[in-house]
Image (cartoon, rainbow, N blue to C red; front, top):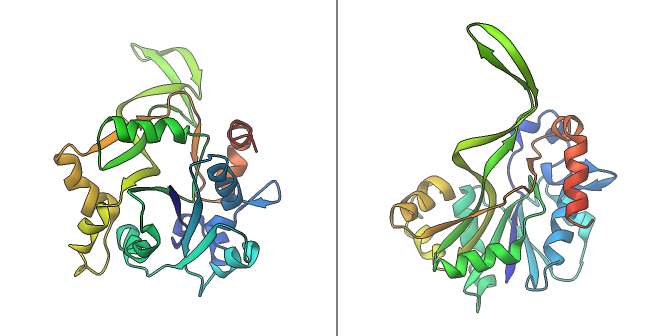
Length: 239
C-alpha cells in the first residue's frame, strides 16, 4: 500500500507563521511535523512508499530540501485543484494498487492503521475514514442547577453527539474515477464533492480511534497550548 500525504494547503489558520514555512515543517522538538507522520507511516510494514503532495515551487520546496533523495519518498506538485483534484496526479503512481492511504499532514495521531485497513476490507467499503466519538475539551465546564454552579469540570472528556471525522483515510483506487467525472470543476473538494455522495450509497466505513488522542496541528500556538497531549501522542507513535 502507498501512503499519500497532503501537504499543499495554504495554512491560513497558521498565519503569520505559515507565510515563512509550510504547515508540514512546523517544528516539534526540533523536527518537522511531517517527519513524525512519515516515520509513523513507515513503521507499518504494508506501507511501501510515501508520496507527498505539496507546492514544491513555493514554500513546499523546504519539504523537498529536507528529505532530498530519501528512499521510498516521492514528491508530486500540488495543482491547487482541491483536496480531490490533487489525487488525479497520483493515478499513474497507484498502478497495481487497489487501495491507498491518505493522511492530511496536520493530523497527529497514533492510529492503528492495521486495524483501520482491516475495517476497510471487512466492511467491503470504497472508503474508510478515521473518526472519534470522544473529545477532551480545552475549556472548563460547570454543572449548574437553578442558576447555581454545583461543580466544575476542568477540560473534561466529552462524548460527542456526532462522530468527528479526522483527516486520515483509506481509499479504494476506484475513487479516482469519481474525481475524474468532476474534472470540469476548478476545485474538487474530496469531502463535499466526492465522499458526500458515496456516503449516501453506503460505501464509506468509519474506524473509531477509541481512546487515542488526536490533534489538528494548525499552528505552532496549538502545539504550545497542547504540549502534554502532543508529547503523549508522539510517545504512543513510538517516536
